Image 1 (cartoon, one colour):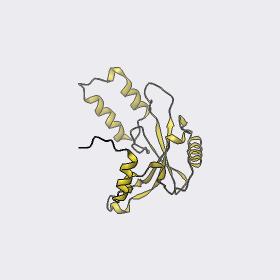
Image 2 (tube, rainbow, N blue to C red; image 1 turned 135 degrees about the horizontal axis):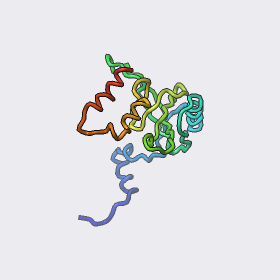
Image 3 (cartoon, rainbow, N blue to C red; image 1 turned 60 degrees about the horizontal axis):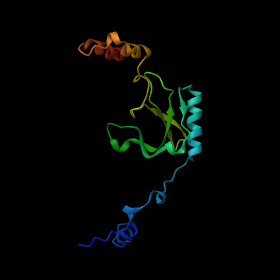
Length: 165
């Protein structure tokens, strides 16, 4: 057995000669066709943020932008081939620190439509009318007198509040 170390250039040459070059592409060699430039994405997100008077500050760091080649905007449960999938940018919005809402959220900018098409909560779930906590729900959850782990009735009240909306 040969103890000589093989450097990455030798491995790359060998793999290229074996027809495996695609597995060794460097990130700067990969190109993606996009409609928007990062500056435009940030501007679209900031304009949307300002018009809708959302909390927090749009993160303007290009290194924090994420590009999805295929983001699912809508699902067709009858035929998944008809799902609305388009390329999109994810722009983080940094929230000021507080005791409950301490995590950032994300705006989804459609590359094709050149506008904000949605929002993701800190867990990556889409945000839409009806799936967020009301101020009363948050107050109830944060109230120490109501947070008894042995009493399921407290959680039934919270869940019922969603049904009442």
